[in-house]
Length: 299
Length: 286
Image 1: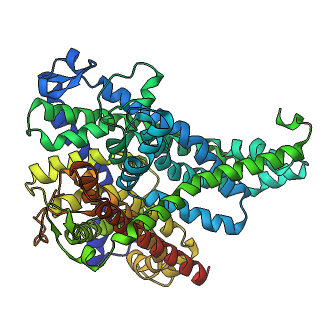
Image 2 (image 1 turned 90 degrees about the vertical axis):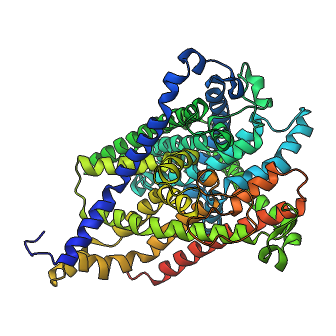
């Protein structure tokens, strides 16, 4: 760059570093290509009316994906109801209230939860959570949308906590000092000044947490009972359901490559991809906007 | 509105207690899970369990092939994802200028991070298993897991590189070092603890994943060790899924033992991260 000529070795290294830099774009495009190439034939092989119907019964060629989409939505909403308050308040506690030693304990614990394989949570769901819910709520089976939501909520918590906590830590201390100097209590400072200032980061955290729950596979496959029924009322929480991810994971192993069923499963993956793409783009737009605004404030 | 409460001190007290309780209720399940698994699983752990092949339709014997398989997959993932991920982070932190291309790279990384694991599985099936004809193999599964791990490694490594003060680079360049020499001799060593943390966290995730290897490399039951990268393999998370949902009448001991081994794997990697971090914090000179 400085006019000095690069040695061949340095030239090679620089080029491979640049190429690796572009690799993420290449991989996203490759993923998109393979999903679309295998998923789009479903649109011609299966009549649209059947594809967007309410009956999923592949053995008799009923490929209605609506119950699966709604199944995913139900579990995701349920998980958000659990994870959002839990995650945001935990982040507030860690960032604003906890003494130093408590932080040092809490943060590794949250990280541990983030690293816990989802199949372990699914296993505990089958052996501990489901039987417990079945007995307490007198249900015919404990493998329901509710158990799925509770466990998925736990999976979303680490994402929400760590990103919200970053957002709270990024609020300049001058904000806190200014508020306290005006005579408000610490509590009023947190909710009146710090949290509103970190609003967009917290929103990003929530979006990414929710995005993780939509895509979660093993836990929901193991604990939601895997029944592709159409959710009709809120009682669906206490019944077995089936999500998009679980459908792919449990049926892909048995279908013949190139059959309509195979293509429909890839089509579901395209739907999932689009869902998470939207969530992630919106989340990143929120945080980009935040960066611009705080830059303006600080300059 | 909030400022009009009659007794802000009381509100603060009650509120603080409430938030503390919520934070506790988020953390207690984690503690409970660890304690419960150790309590239920440790009776099943013995030398035979971790060193023998499964016998009698997995109802007896050990889980050695699953342990070895997970080790292979983790190492395979590291071989592909660490060089590419670290290089990509170097590009973003040291070379990239803020233009449309860089913004697209960042968007791509964010998207990679958000793609559901089972979708990675389908992609691996389409590209590595069928198109490149690797078959269901350790190679295909490792490559699939690598791409899934990339965003974690890239973003943590970039953060670590950016934390190295800019003045270090300026001084090095002014002493006549080339850009690569500066990166190789100065920036990378300084950022090493942060990079290692990211790598271990990424690999920890890969080691625990089931959905991406379902159709790319996991074997239901394989009573021998894989002897080439083109063999399918058993793996701890998939094995746990199999014995807890697919095989009827599985002794509960073996199930809890498998969970315990898998969790020990994860705990061990978490411990490494904590260790690297605390050492780096103690030694930091700037």
